[in-house]
Length: 146
Picture 1 (cartoon, rainbow, N blue to C red):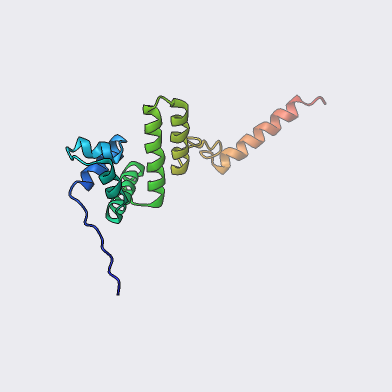
Picture 2 (picture 1 turned 90 degrees about the horizontal axis):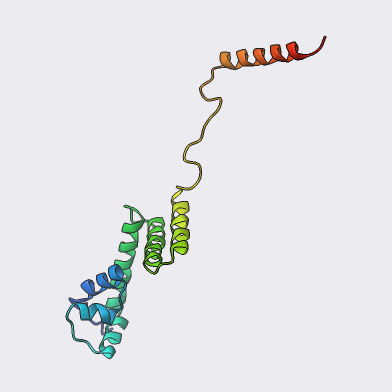
């Protein structure tokens, strides 16, 4: 039988990943901000660990879901990712691309299109419609030469 030698989740992974997601920094930058003195090789080693990758993926999905909506749904995750990218584009000064991304998110959420639909005949009763028909026919008859 083979046993998997799984490395433990280090106590600095969650705060480092949070910095990576929130501040858009790399893992070495995040660990430096946390006061961890890791070499580049150590950073690569930690970032390749399965425990790190699983925690990163879970925290990233949770971040996207909170940006995209209250529910932890696929739609919320996708919208959250798009809005996060739009935020990053705005920070880079790419306003057109950020606007396009935000527009795409609005489309996914069903927020695009007419804000209200106006029903021209919605408030009219059958009697009102009949009166309108009669009035139109009377005007047509009056405008015809005899």
